[in-house]
Figure 1 (cartoon, rainbow, N blue to C red):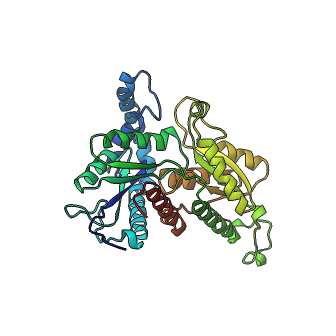
Figure 2: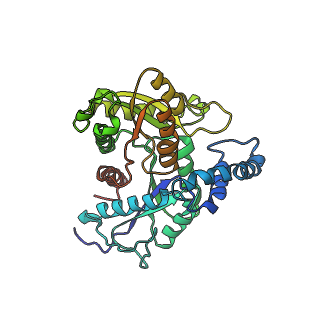
Figure 3: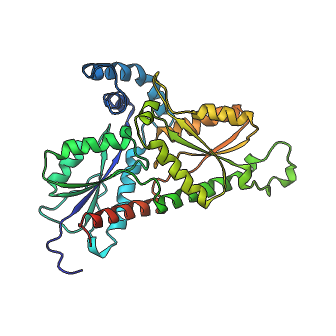
Length: 366
């Protein structure tokens, strides 16, 4: 290991969307979201914030209802903190960057001066802990080397682009070297993690609920559905079509992920997009339209893979698990969803490998 006295703590900044941590936070969260012109341009720039206030006010009550159905808040912060803890533990098992942390808060306290090891922080784009507050905390801790890692596997200017732009804006006021990880859609361990949860999801269709009413009841406990009996629906978060027309790589990277997955598992698959809002043209087909189309084709068993999401939040827990599942039932479809990656060991291994490679490329780790 050599002499560790000169080593400095390297800070890993996990970037994510964020979500309301209470029903009272729904409206201000929506305001922050719609105030971002990287996502949506609401008229001329001077009208962005007034219109964002109006939209967030009009939508807040309905959105609060959705959050009530999933526990009254978004779980994304709790999950991202758990991911940060797991990543920090995995990274610091390496002799070169060993440290200890038993604090359970989102941002552990630091001793003054340089401290050996790696610390992982969480910075959210639209709700607390906000990126600007986390970067400030890292600065106070004496961290001068930061790896900013987007938790969006697929780059888009509206997600990773917006978050990194905010980091650059905030970091400009401090003395720090920052390395950015903007995309990792085809990382081998990420692909393995997706394949693992997909295989488990397909296996879940062997349960009695997946058996047709015509099946012999005596065979209910042993009926098996093959991979070909289950259709995979990759459901990605939608974007305005104009983003793609302007050169955004999001769709190409989604297809890149699917291409790598299908090299490892033979499946019948489809792609759709969810969570669109507003009157502009969004990516097609939408997930609800795709469900209707598949039902009309006679598909009866669908496993939804929320491909652009790495943790549970309202898009998985409400939109897929409640809204689309109810729709599917009405269409005669048995719909299930893969488990989100959350703290899946292969996913944490993905993040660890990305960080270590990035630090080596930056000359921060040998």
